[in-house]
Image 1 (spheres, rainbow, N blue to C red):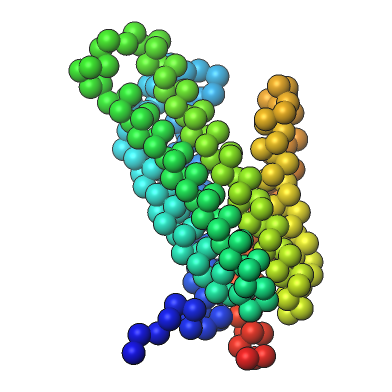
Image 2 (cartoon, one colour):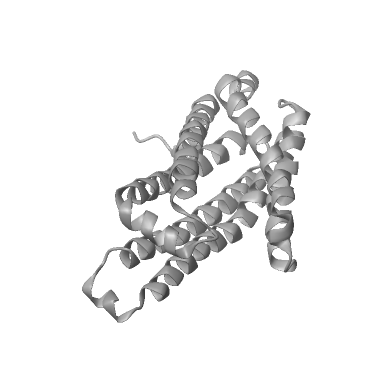
Length: 239
């Protein structure tokens, strides 16, 4: 007899989500800081094009890293739904859907990485473009990646806020962790809205980065530790 997916024990679901988060942290650090930060010069389109053309394989590795994150996020959404469905099945399902929507936007954003690779490939038909036009197209595609991901982060922020609610409602998770996740989720939403509403966003980019980075890193790392160390134990004990 085949077991239903929802028959997976909460503790196992927590471990799946926790190890998934660990993999995402490592892959995201590599893709963002060892690939994007190394190759992209936001103030020099020509230098960015040259960096990518000279280090194409590195960009491909970053793309693969993001693709693995794309897959892992689907698994995490499923595992967290299982973990918290006993608290409130409807809210847990909604939280999973918001994470899946974010993941879909990440997948859409990655299309622009493929476009960048093609623009820097030296394909014969690209000879129709002047070098300056190619430089600009590469930067535009990289910006499109950022904006698609930025829209997805609204959905991710709502996912975290719903997780925070589930933790606060559960009675078996530290309320501080629930509050941290809620604040981190709100910060993601606030940052995207600021991008949309403020023409002077770049003048305050460092402040907004801190507003997002500090609560998100603290909350998601703490959540990962909780998933690996204690997640699911209380549900199984009560069950």
